[in-house]
Amino acid sequence: MVDRSLSARSLELLLGDWRGRGSAYEALADRIRLLIVDGRIPVETRLPAERDLADRLGVSRTTVAAAYRRLRELDHLHSVRGSGSVARLPGAPAILPAAFESEYLDFSKAAPPALPWLSDLARRAAEDLPAHLGDSGYDPIGIPPLRQAIADRYAQRGLPTSPDQIMVTIGAQHAIALVSRAVLGRGDRALIEMPTYPHAYEALRGAGARLVGSPVVPHPAGGAGTAAAIDADREEAAGLVQSIRHSNPAIAYLMPDFQNPTGRTMSRESRARVLDAAARQGTVVMADETIAELDIDRSEAFPPMAADGPAVLIGSVGKTIWGGIRVGWIRADRPLIRRLLAVRAPGDLGTPVLEQLIVARALERMDDVIALRREQLRAGRELVERRVAELLPEWRVPHVDGGIVTWIGLGAPVSSQLVLAARQEGLIVTAGPRFGVDGAFERFLRVPICQSPEATDAAVQALARAWRSLGGVPLGEPDPELLASVV
Image (tube, rainbow, N blue to C red):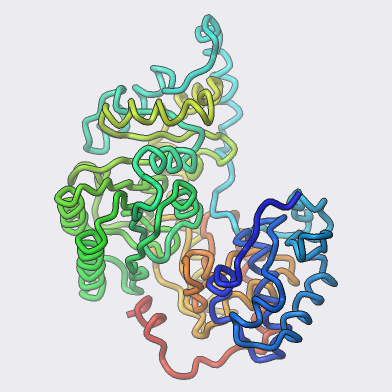
């Protein structure tokens, strides 16, 4: 049953600059298809009526009708009596998303493979389980050994923490959603970086927030410490401070370390400025630190953001141990932890105990985990830089000093077209606009550096073939958005 609909205005915002070099109806169909494929238009969502969309886009109804017809031919739309045109994925039941075929290489997820010793950790955790079988097993706050281990890890990183400041969650996404629901009222403003992690702004929207964006400058090519990097960092902090003062947001979602997707790290000076402005305004800063420890060769060590001022911290093991272990956490003051418990109860009854025991065991060897990931990321970064330089010399790859992705400048606003072409080459990758809320970032492509060397090399080769299938795109005049990433 269709219970979601998309207005013509909302679809126009998602489409962004959709017009390409070919026919208008093909360009419109391609862009809507991308929005369905990457989840920005959920399956079973009713699209606007042809006349409404045509009026909104300033095109003929014939153009929209032809685009919809093309999408039906591709099995991305289907008709429901009385409900119009409804989004779907090819080969899937109308209400369920289709699993990607095995021959596809999926680079839409920036996550490393599981730790090689994860099976051993799981066996040892199972041996710990009998000590926890005496109660109901419903655990909304986290088992004491894991909360203590997380608190100890924060202390090792320079932020004294007690276990009663920790809530264990079902991954970082769950943590972000819980904090959003605890802090936000419907219609409150939420400050986000632009671009940013898509599932975070979706969680904020789901809690009723009105989003306010503040630009993030992509990681400069010269790396941290250069004059360009210092200037960019100060400019970004000034923008965040101004946004906090002018929009008075209830919450600010930030990624201070190796921001996804740009890879930039915020200096400690800038963190303190932003946290001070937020405290004065009464804004709760939610710092996503799920990849904060994944530095490759950053010039200095950074403690958790809360060491520089009041902040709620989000962590998880999805990017360090394995995404299949659904354990994350929130570090906050005790009154907020109590509010989070109240917010959590209607939605879930706790984090699985066995998975918590696995993570508790893993944290005992966290230094080994980080050392392994550092070498994997170093190899991935170097491979992406080298292969892109060989196969796609028109592109600009910033030299990130940590994190799991790089934010590549394409030189032209063709990210969505490239992503669709890449699917024809067996590669699933996420277009730049997915990381914004207004159709921006068509000149960028996020590429993970955390997957296996074989997969990474195959992905870059697929991107090169897709680029050639588009005929390549001349750089033309220098673009300010691109130049910001390579200064």
